[in-house]
Image 1 (tube, rainbow, N blue to C red):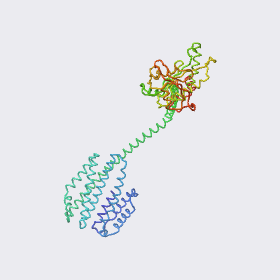
Image 2: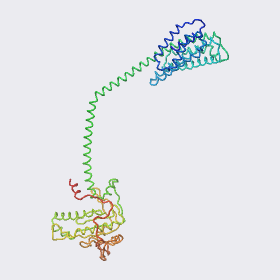
Image 3: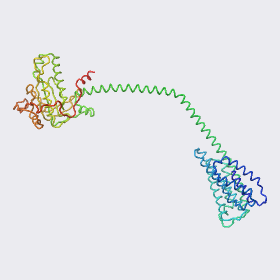
Image 4: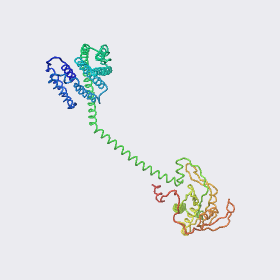
Length: 524
C-alpha cells in the first residue's frame, strides 16, 4: 500500500502544471515507504532499490519532469510489488484450508489494488499527454486484469462467507459495468473519450480504491484471527503431546518392569516348552523304535501318512526259515528260564548278523526264525544273494556253538530257503503285524522242515536265481517228496566262491542302530 500511495503521489506530482511543485509531501511519502520497505529489505534486489532511489532523486531535483519520461520509469513500483506478491504466495506452503483461502483472497485483492493503482496512474497520465495506441492498450490491460483479480477475490470471499466484503466487491463490479468507460475502451482508435470523462472516471477509481482498502483491512483482520486460532490449536496440540510425553516418561519405569516380567515369563514358558518338547521327542523315539520292531520303516511311514496301508504284491522275494534241531526235547528237559536264555542268545546273534544285509526279520515263533529279502523295498534280483550270504554267515557263526545250560550238547539249526512271489500287508489294529502270504512262504517252511542239521536247504527257484548271479557253490540233493507239494528237486547251498564279505552292499537298511543302545533306550 505504501508503494501504491507513493506511485500515486509521483504521478500527480509529475503531471502538475504549477511552476512550483511542493516536494515536502513527496519527501514524507518517500520516508514512510522506506520505513515499511526496511522490514522486507532482504527480499528486494539491490538493483531494484537503486532504480527506485534514482527515480526519487530525479523527481525531487529536476524541474522539467516531462523530459524524464516518468511514466515509463514507474514500472519499478510494479516490479517491487510483484516481488512482494510472490513472497506472499511462497509463504502459503503449510497452512490450513481456511487460512489458505483467506490468504489467497488477500493475494488476489492486492493484485486487484495493484492493477487499479496502475489504472489510476495511467488515467492521470492520459489527461496531461497526447494519447497514443500504447497508452490506450496499457490502460485497457490494467482494467481487464483488475476485473479478473477482483472476480477471483469475490469467489474466495464467497467461500469464506464474508457478507459485507462481498457486497462491496459486487458493488464495485456493478459500477464498473454501468460506466461508459468499458464500452469506450472497446474501440481504441484515436481518443474515444474526453479528458472530462477520464477525470470523472479517475475519481470513481479513487473511490473504489478506498473501498478496497477497507475490504483489505477487514480481510487482513480475518487472516490474523485465523492465524491466532491456528497457533492456539497448535499450542494445544503441543501441550497434549508434552503431557503424553511426560506421562510416558513417568510411566516408563513401570512399563519397563512389566516388560521385563513379561519377557521373563515368556522365557520361562519357552524353556518349559523346550524341555517338554525334548521329552516328547524322546518318547516319540521310543515309540518309533518299538513300532519299527513290529513294522518295516517304509510301511510305518505310509501308515502314518495314509492311516491304512493296502496289501502289496511282490513278483520275486526270497524267504529264509530256520529252527533248532531237537528243540522239543530240549524244552521238555529244561526250565522255562533256560529255554528263554538259550533263545535270547541265539536270536541276539542272528539279529546282529542280519543287520549287515538288506533283509527284513518278519517274526520269531518259538524256535522258528523267519527272514525275507526283496520287500517291503524291492532290490531287483539281489534278494536271493542277500539271503544266501546271510544264511552262510549264520551257519558259520553257529559252528561249535553249544546249548548254554548243556555244555556237552551242540546247538544245531536247520535252514530252508525259497524264492518266488508273495503278498505282504499290515494285519490287525490293536497289535498290527506285517505278514507275508503265499505258497512261497509255505515252500520255504517245507525246505526248512525237510532239511538236515547245519545245512541250508534251497528250492529249485532259489538255485536258479543264484545261478543267474553266479559265484555260489551248490549241489543237488535229488528229488524229494514234500508234504503238500509232491516231488520236488532241491539243492544244498554249500558256500560262495571267494568267501563271504562281512557286510554286503545294500539299499536302505530297516533300522541301523546299535543293539545295546536300543535296549538301553527301551529300558529307560
